[in-house]
Length: 332
Ligand code: TXA
Ligand code: MG
Image (cartoon, rainbow, N blue to C red; front, side):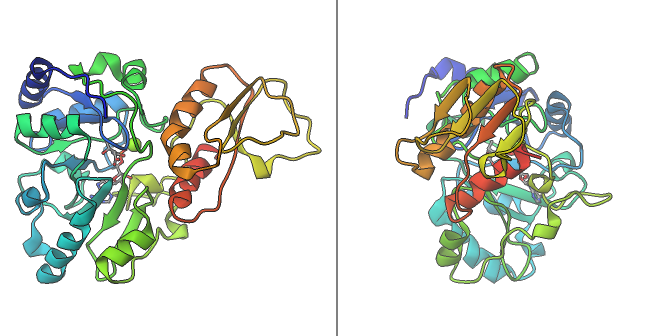
């Protein structure tokens, strides 16, 4: 993976984090907007920059799974030995795109937990993220580096366009390899539960953990009336371009279509309408490629002043579950 960051830039970024400032950095999933997770004032800057509701907790990024006991209070786990064993099993995916939710240690700023007493932790695998974490030497709270509810950024340019003025530095690692946010897995209950689907699938987690893993409960896809959201990824509308989005199977063949339509397809195929822009994400419909390019395509189409963006769909199985989760929200 290309790294375009000099040791001087890295040191500047680490110093900025230590001074309570915000630094955007690449991860393998999407770019993050980072702050020192122990510094409440710094973390409040993240919420202000994104326009993020204070009720949405943040993911904390660590350099190694060995640091988990420092930032999670495992003594408050429902069953400490069992949770420790599960953490060992989940660690086959680290560094990588899985975040685990655990009881938070007191050292984590309360703003990170958004009013709750749990924290999501993950070890990213992008070399620049790992280098930044090593240089900083502490936990970095980082949501996706986009304005709240807009599409997550998968290039440094996306970050600059949305949050350029709010950040001290943007570390440019080129386009993100995965392109979809991490799988969020709660280890707070006897049966582990996926709160947000991602590229590490329920099947992979169940197989690594050797137990049943629950999926997101469909009924939870709307925000509770008050209090902390179980998971902000569960908010119905999210990841949304400003242009209306329709999923291709829901296009009414008899309806009068607007004139300026964009089409984002997973594989080459004929279309029953004229599109002013067509983007084919993969020649073979391969879902890894679709996930990696999807957010960039949505942003490109959103910048064209279209009347409608029509997006392809896939079976919500394996990686397809995370892709369809994001698209259903974008289309609301
Ligand atoms: O791939 C990713 O996870 C990216 C990169 C930057 O690491 N980060 C990211 O953060 O997507 P954000 O803030 O956009 O999404 C955070 C997700 C939310 O869906 C939220 O539900 C979940 O993490 N989350 C964080 N803390 C939580 C907690 N204590 N309990 C339940 N869910 C939590
Ligand atoms: Mg986000």
